[in-house]
Length: 143
Image (cartoon, rainbow, N blue to C red; front, top):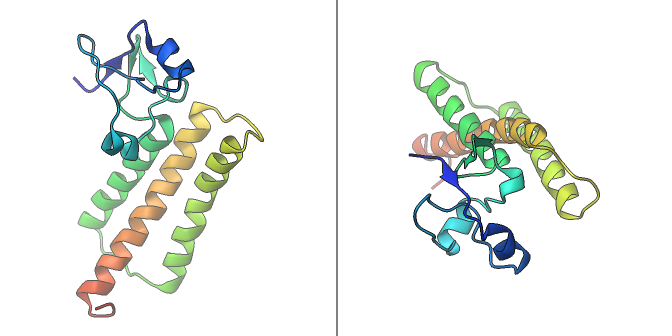
């Protein structure tokens, strides 16, 4: 099962800076460096269904859905990569950066739907950049 359920000690763990947010229903596990690289998994920033939390936060969920959607699209349809497409991809990542940065600096508090939306847009932009780099390597433009 891909959803997690928080245990009763999670709030105390978060308050003591020992982030131990989503845990499997029957077993606890601490977030190591690899798991933190994937996502911070803060419960307030994570979607849940009937008390079961997604394994990643709303913004990361958007990133994964957006990137996967773009990769699925380019599998079936040809995309001509150009400078304007790269600039568009960079512009698509900017809202995600601004949303995350203003939240980090505590200028404002974002909500999960906005995080998901900016994650979707940023995920598509990141996927375009990844596919462009791959295309440039294959075409011999980058050694």
